[in-house]
Amino acid sequence: MKRFGLIATVAVLAVAGTAKAQSDATGPQPQLPTEALSIVSDSGKTYKFTVELPVTDEQQDTGEMFRTFIPADSGMLFMFPPPEAEHDMWMKNCPVPEDMVFIGADGRIKSIAENTVPYSEKPVGSGPVLAVLELQGGITATDGISVGDKVIAKQFPGS
Image (cartoon, rainbow, N blue to C red):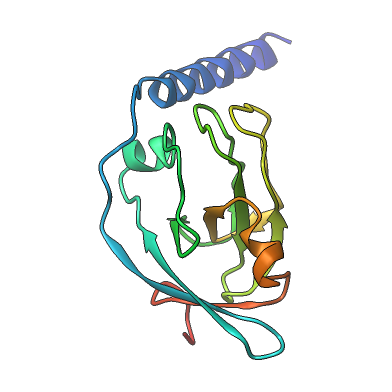
């Protein structure tokens, strides 16, 4: 029982430390380096985006917080080190809805959380993935982007 208590305490402290780091941001971060990304649907239609690339822990923690607009042809691509793992996202300090596109190591879309709720701290996740692409809320439905579509970017093999 003592062992569990120590593990639980360490886990709580680790989460509290992460939450503090994520809550330190008070405004949107400057635009990050960008690159081209495309999504190819099963029908062969290609959708092109310019995505920002948060690399550091701080950049990833801040993400799209405090941004009041996400252009329809833009987004943010969060890459995680292999192998695929569970990566929950949230909408803390995000005033506009987003579509969260969860991408496997093969570059295929595994799931999509459409129109996530602004300011929600409820975790949004979909099982093991290599990356998460945040886009303007509703754009996946508008464009017909769906599970199984191929994401083309230098981060994914075979792109």
